Length: 317
Image 1 (cartoon, rainbow, N blue to C red):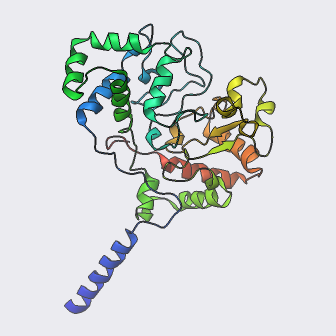
Image 2 (image 1 turned 180 degrees about the horizontal axis):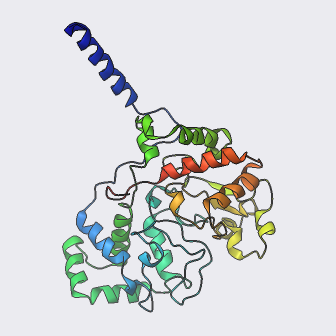
Image 3 (image 1 turned 30 degrees about the horizontal axis):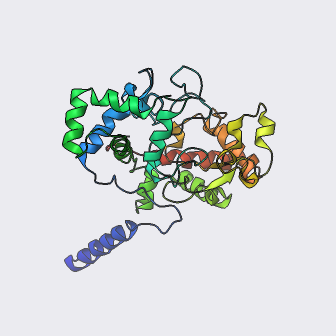
C-alpha cells in the first residue's frame, strides 16, 4: 500500500471513530456533570448530612437512611425513625434526587430545601424542631465559625437547608456504561444489553421511566392493570400516595415514578419496599403497570440493561 493510500485509510478510520463517538439520538439522555457550587456550602452540607444532632434525640442523621458510602438509600424495606420504629414508606436513594421534579413518593414538596424541613420536623423521622436544631448547631464553635464564614447571617434555618441541598446536588452518579453508550461509545454495551434496552422501549417501560433520570419526572398510578394494593393486602394510609397530598380522588394510589439510575443496587423496591429483588420488581411492573407477560428471555435482557444504569460517584463505581 502506498503512503497516499495508507493516509486515506487512516483518515477514514479517524472519521469513523469520530462518527461513532457522536451522542446518540435516543429518548433517554446521559446524566449531566456535577454542578459547580460554593465548596464551603457543600462541605457544610456534607457535615450536616451526617449530623445526628438534627434529630430530637441525637440518634439519627440523614446518612442513617441515605447511606452515601453505599447506594444512597437503605437496605431495609422501611427505614427506622428516631424512635426505632419503621417509617411509612421505603427510603429512596438520594443519588440523583436533585434531578427529580418533586421529592418524596407522594411528591409533596418540589425542592431539596423543602425536603429537609419535612424530614427534620416529621414526628416519624427526626421529630425535631428548628429552634432546637439552630441552638445545637450554633453552640458548636466549629459550625458557628464555618457558617459565619460562609453565610453573612450565620446559622439560620434557611442556611442549614441550603447547605444540605448544596451537598445533595453533588450526589449525581454520571459515567454509567449506558451513559457512555448514549454519548457514542456504542461498543461498551454487549449485544444482549442493547437488546435489553430495545425491549425496554418496545414493551413500553420508557413511557414512565423517561428523561435524564430515567424516571422521577411524573406521577403514575401503581396498579394500572390490576389492584396491586388489594392483591398485596394490609393496606396503609401511605398506600394512597398522592391522594394524601391533594385529597383528589383521581390521585389515589398515584406515586412519583422512581428513577431507575443505579436500580440494580437499591433493593428493596417500591414505596412499600415489597419487592426484594430486581427480578420480582420487573415481574410486578409487567403485571400491574404494563398488563403484559414477557418471555423469560426478554425479562432477562431487560434486567441486563437495567444493570448498565449503575453509575459512578466522584469518579468511582
